[in-house]
Image (cartoon, rainbow, N blue to C red; front, side, top):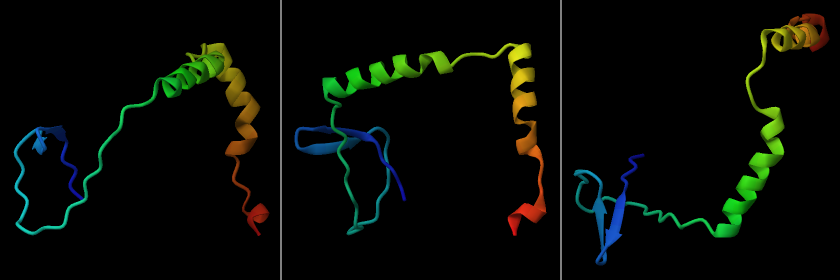
Length: 81
């Protein structure tokens, strides 16, 4: 699949850069719509909601995490049956 980006102006599609498409080749055009303002507000609200879970861990926090999940790194084939 080839993706061609560009703009639609004066009833014509103008690609960002030249492209060669064979004559009578079937194409599918997808037009991106602008996001409604209420959608962007919801995105910002979600970012605030998850912000406390994001960031950089200290070495101590990383050590605690690795210790807490070390059992998940063990492969026990007999449990697969």
